Image (cartoon, rainbow, N blue to C red):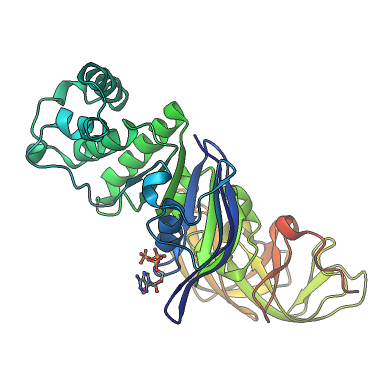
Length: 365
Ligand code: ATP
């Protein structure tokens, strides 16, 4: 059980800056996701938390104690890697008991502990089996058993499901989450898969080029992205971006796209410049009454919904609408957006002017 706090964490490899200045807190018992594209610094951040890499600057606290410069062995963390390197010459029981035997725990206590852990993982009946012939799922359970048995303060997992095929991956993801809910141990999980992060995580940190773009609960990050990067990285299809130039007076609460003014309550007070309206595909409605038109380029049938691609005066837009909505290629249709769900971004820096996370930031009028 552990709270893990990161403050201004930075890592340089020679002249290359891999992690810029990360600050976030992982609360005790959370299932916490480090999410971002390849090379964004997720693994480096995790390795610094584990003590496998020392930070260039900044601090790491575990349960209030600063551990930034302490070696991994003094942090009481269990690392579960992508490749489940089990000891091939030992059976399941011996693989799980190995960390306890190395610590010098008496035999009877080891046996009791291994039985407990095997029960939690549902592998009590295969303790005597060699690990060689096990299925992928059982190998993962044994690897987890070996981590759990030590009762560490926290579990760190680096893309543990990365090598599995899609169906099995989903099954193991559910099992991992259920196991976490039973045990309640702080878990930090690295992934580049936005769906996995949203499905499994209590909280998510989204990283890009070594920078923490946003930190929060999945729905907050999805609904109120702090940057265009986050808006684009989460969601499939991602958020639509409609560029526009705003020269609005104080108190004007609308966005003009083409000739059409969209009411955007209290967002744009005094904003000027090159801005962008972000709207998720599921918040775009095909609306004959709207004077804002788009030309239908394609419709992709997905069962209960369809993704309609349209060209508008402000760029390409994707709408997720009911499959029963009739659309014809190459025709003009009206579009409307739910004003409560849009985000306005500043195109100069890609940041949301106002989102739930930073409401009130825009007030330069
Ligand atoms: P991936 O999912 O591809 O592993 P990641 O987000 O986990 O991506 P990191 O492994 O943390 O990314 O790497 C961040 C950056 O730091 C990458 O550009 C990587 O090449 C670089 N890097 C990582 N470790 C080292 C190292 N030991 N020496 C030099 N550069 C490194």
